[in-house]
Amino acid sequence: MAAAARTASRAFLRSTPATSSFRPAARSTRFTIPTQAFRASSRRGYSSEAGPSKSSNTPVILGLLAAGGAGAYFYLNGADTSAKGPFVPTQQDYQKVYDEIASRLDNSEYDDGSYGPVLVRLAWHASGTYDKESGTGGSNGATMRFDPEASHGANAGLKVARDFLEPVKAKFPWISYSDLWTLAGACAIQELGGPTIPWRPGRVDRDMTACTPDGRLPDGSKDQKHVRDIFYRMGFDDREIVALIGAHALGRGHPDRSGYDGPWDFSPTVFTNEFFRLLLEEKWQQRKWGGPKQFTDKSTQTLMMMPADLAFVNDKAFKKHVERFAKDNDAFFKEFSDVFVKLLELGVPFESKPEDRFVFKTTE
Ligand code: ZEM
Image 1 (cartoon, rainbow, N blue to C red):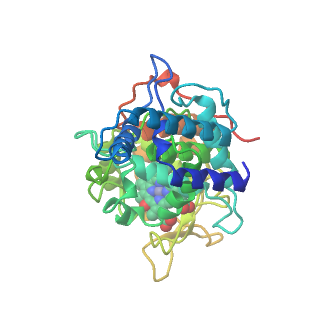
Image 2 (tube, rainbow, N blue to C red):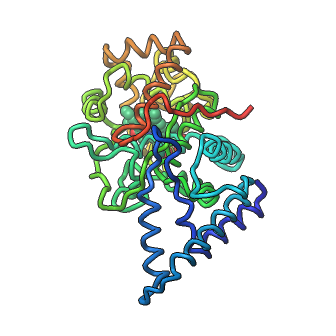
Image 3 (cartoon, rainbow, N blue to C red):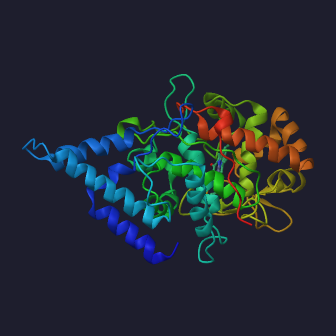
């Protein structure tokens, strides 16, 4: 959509209290989209709109505001203006969110030319706080919007990804941040040449009281024992952990974020099994520099591995899968897709079923 329309949409949303009418409602009896976040703002809107006098025409006024809001929404998004009742997002609406994110990924000024990798990292860090014992953490809530979680060392630099998604949220205000962040991760994997990531909505944003304690995400300076402790806590087994780490085919370490420096492979904006191949085939030597302990490939000295990455070849049970994925890209794509879907859904109380997941169309 044209930038002008986006601006208009944002201005409209800022200036009207009727945005609460955009709350998604149940699409069908077997598929319900959460409405709590919107209900909360609806309640706030009601009490401040109604003021001290309980005038009997308040509901009428609110109804008109709601109708106007919905009309403007449908107008701005090219939907049918004759639609009645509350807005119920369908797969097509989520595909529009996907398309909007996809259209914004490329940027020659940023990193290696794409925001995709940092969006994958955002989706992973939002989800990877899950603790299967207590049921806390996970992508439901998008609590990384708030301190203390936003300032956890592991999340350094992810403001870039959150800010990147703000205009998308402004254009599609009915989507929760937690759905948006995970959808963006799925979109990035697909757009960067990875497997399809079936995805379903249903996450509800929560407030800062749901922030997780620091220390739930892995530390790149540690070994396989630490990696297992962290991922077993989320409920993953060795095979799944190895599949997940293949995402390091994307992106890079940034000295001003984690302290680590450089990409893991030569095509950091293309999703491949290259991380595994290079991990096995290259000779990794410790880099002599002032930053944290990291390794570089002997051949070009342009790539990097963290101590935690090398744990995947130092550990026999992990290495078995590294060898398998290095040889068989199809197996990697299939197993990565399954485990990434699982990651993005940890701790989410869906009312929909796994078979209700959407498969988004990748941009051609
Ligand atoms: Zn990462 N990761 N990660 N990771 N990660 C970084 C970057 C990226 C670990 C880790 O310490 C770091 C998974 C697992 C693990 C991505 C995806 C996934 C960085 C660099 C560090 C330090 C951050 C920076 O400086 O910008 C450790 C120790 C892990 C487990 C042992 C899993 C699982 C992932 C997804 C499924 C991605 C895409 C990046 C690149 C981000 C970017 O901005 O380029």
